[in-house]
Image (cartoon, rainbow, N blue to C red; front, side, top):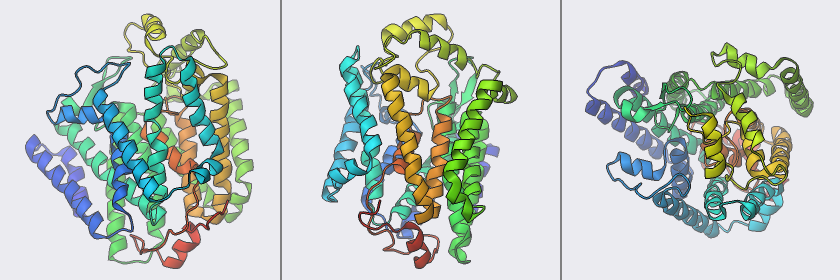
Length: 478
């Protein structure tokens, strides 16, 4: 796996851009060929959620067409969105639904096992009725419906753990190398400008520094979890190569996370890793995970109310006690909330009238979001929507708790990622969006009866008995 180190070294070399591009593409092709030659127990349908995740981690379909020299964004607007993106999204949804129909996925089983998630999605659709722009709100809410479709494709693969592993690794094969390439050799693609300060930011393959930080959060946490799995396998050449791969991508992800200056993603990643380590220290911890979680939440809320720890932490990270202007924006948004019970409608709060009035208070900032996931839900869906979201997060935790006893490794992945999502939502728009983090939330939040997860040899040599003990579900098991 010396090619991993070679690709990462591109960031410190001064090669002609075309040569760097050629080497990066060759590296990506090598990784995918290596991945496919291992003959993982996944179907061709996994390419659909992979494309969906890569686009979420990078840029829209129309933006990629523009990068490749095919200008297609004409006629698009901030409110309406690109018609090309809309067509692509609906095409992905149609293809995904055809896969699920062919696999005979039980809709009644999905509804029965995911009541809170269904309630949240349903309320998002219902809120279109009282939106000032119902047609725009409806188009936006249908776009996020791709998340559960793609998540169900992953769930219904022959081997779920293998499918999740391949999905994340293949996403990293694109996101990490291309981000490093663009930052170093194509700054016109890899750099953006901050709406608040006007300073140049590093975005990599994403559309902004916070997006790049989110990518690093998702992929960094996966590779840490994957390292724990790989470390426990039998010592052989395959294990050694996999460890080299993990080490190479871990270095690349940390490098990008440092460049992104995304404090929210860095803190969320650190907390998620600490939780995974904590629950693995002693088997007895699983028995009291609910008590520990409640105690941690109470302490955090008390510390925030008494000492304002979020402001202190932001100040220590060089962002100022106002969380880079977020607190002033939050106060302003609350003043413009005209329907605290129902909200303005799904993603309707920032449509022209209110957006322009708030933007007038911030002439140097392109206002387009509250930079707080919980506040964003309150503004769009009101107290009812916020209550359902909180219920969904709690219900997800209670799903994960018994998973720690049935399938410990998968359970602690879900627990760590849930903590990351909850924390990330405090200073970023996380929930009910097209972001990759919200897509990953569907993977950890949804339940579906899986009957066969171990039909093929695992990719890194885990024994069949161990694999069955940790990842096999019984049909109808709660």
